[in-house]
Length: 65
Image (cartoon, rainbow, N blue to C red; front, side):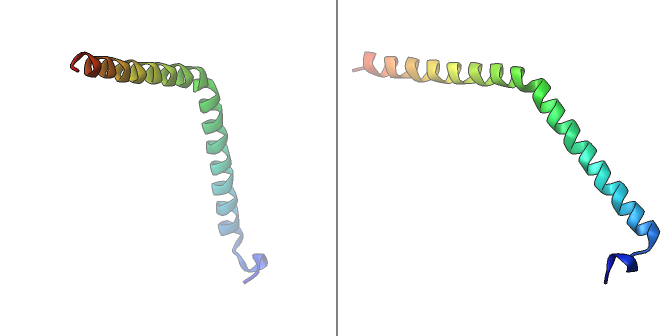
């Protein structure tokens, strides 16, 4: 089957669907870029809290010896 065999309506619908996907992916990229500072802040906070917890647990273990 060649592209010439595809009905015009189906071809237009597929083109519209592809454009919709491109627009959604562009929106996704824009949102990620806009949220990047907040994502980095949250990640940094999570790492710091996790390491603080590890340190506190380690300190408690050494005190129990």
